[in-house]
Image (cartoon, rainbow, N blue to C red):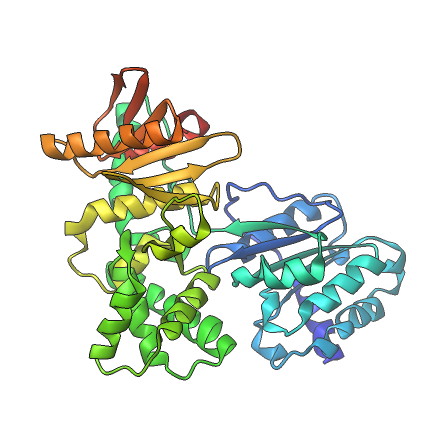
Length: 430
């Protein structure tokens, strides 16, 4: 194993890294903390590592940087006791580096059970900067919180935002230019259906569908079934299909339990709860609770479900173009989720899609693909007014396909904005 580590380390040091698109996240290079990048598979975590490595190579020797992908089949099966051999192999190759600072990049670290024990020890005892990635939310909670105890800064990585998607396609963002807006709107029509996974952009529809199918297979079988020893993979796949075809809708666990039971599945309600938790752990899905002043009340109400990428919906739903409102809502959720975990829906007389707590403000947002129908417009506006009264807020947003207007009602403002503008205006639109 040590000789294999030597070969992998050497091969990477000699390798040039090209074609990396910088992402819209700022990762520190010289923090005293362990840097953790967490997110769904193929969301770009490795590319971000490579971008960081390229930046380091501008100022330090390549030989001071170690990169290992723990899903490299040559390393299987990798165990905790093997990890010490990484630095042993490295210092045998470069003994003069023992007195220099080393940068260690460990990709998909969750593959090795109890990896955190090794990472914590070398972080505490050596002059080394450590960067890790993983495809499990548990890295942000159980494993990191209990074993790394304040030693890490974590960053969640998602598939491309719409702004990153435009950058990837070399489309200029100028909301004041008619020409730029025409390219932006054309790109958005693809983005809301195909999603933001880099490998699917620009591919033929059937190729993109195949790529996404492979991603889901890895998530279901490797990140969930294998990790949690699930035998009933058929039920897991059916739950997958149900959730991705019903994004931005309320999920009743009781209804789902009865529906699956009627289809002949042998299961308990706990099975549904657990499988949903595993899908969230793998960053495939998110659930949003109703806002209530007590956790018990939140748990008694259905949750709304959202997908990490719109592209997963088209895997199962061929009538997707008829459901633009749900696609818009999922995009809006992801836009908010990149900024905060504190997202709820509100229900009074009317329902409001999102109540979000950001660092410096609270936000109310309704999503409606079109509000040309007066009943739809009135419902959306009245829902926001009711929620604004409840939360003591003076502003709210109604996001649509292409309408733009500012409503002033008593002392309250509702900003009606096109989705593309809301997504691209940054803090100004929040």
